[in-house]
Image (tube, rainbow, N blue to C red; front, side, top):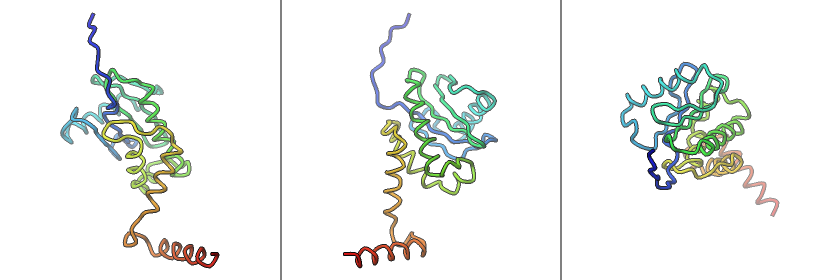
Length: 177
């Protein structure tokens, strides 16, 4: 029996993927070099999708990796870790991502709404996982931090409506003082 003791590591997530109901990539973030080229990544994603899109389970072992996943309407969410990784931690990341997006998209977690709010997805993933290290597993905190980051949009990137709304609020507060 192999009694190799693995060193503890904070690097628990190898990848986060979101695929549509055809298995095409909508979002993919790989945190290590398990699949260094885009061609290898796409082949891996097709393999995962083919193995998981017809099942109701939440976890799979595939190519020596632990894959936890969830589907909703026309999206498939995947969090991938090594085979010795704690599945509950990976599931906590998956649930945090899904619940954060659900709150940000007002319970409308589907392909079109996600594509319209990709910047929110990028910010949410960055708040949850950084370089493969899990930073946050509370969706309330993630949504709060994403909202704070969204408020700091430079004036040149704001729409006219946003600028007018901001000006109205500033005038209102200055008059109330």
